[in-house]
Image 1 (cartoon, rainbow, N blue to C red):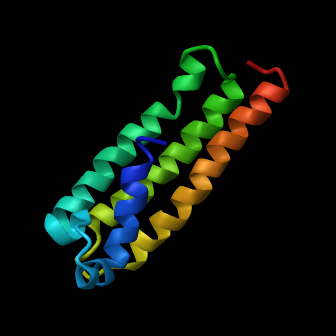
Image 2 (cartoon, rainbow, N blue to C red):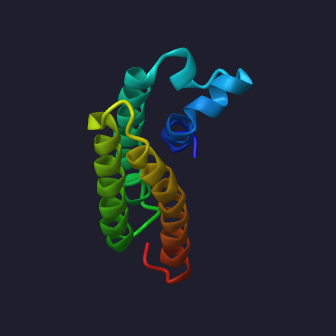
Length: 121
């Protein structure tokens, strides 16, 4: 969750940037700008995707979990890439990443739960 939080909330902050600025809330796009926020989203997205495989490598999950976490991580990074390469006024890619990040977190935790309950690890 620690690594998931930055790209999730910064994606939200990108497509609601005007609201944060008007309210005086110092979210990254408001204080550091659009370009830096997009770079940070991509960086954290890559780290998140790689860390998603950690339960397999420490013996807490099976190869099935690894396969699913790899696919989910790949989609997450692809969505982060679309945010990174999007135009400054593109609000669709950050919004899509925000929505997917919720689905990603649910799916990763559900996969760990199913893997454990099924005794696959």
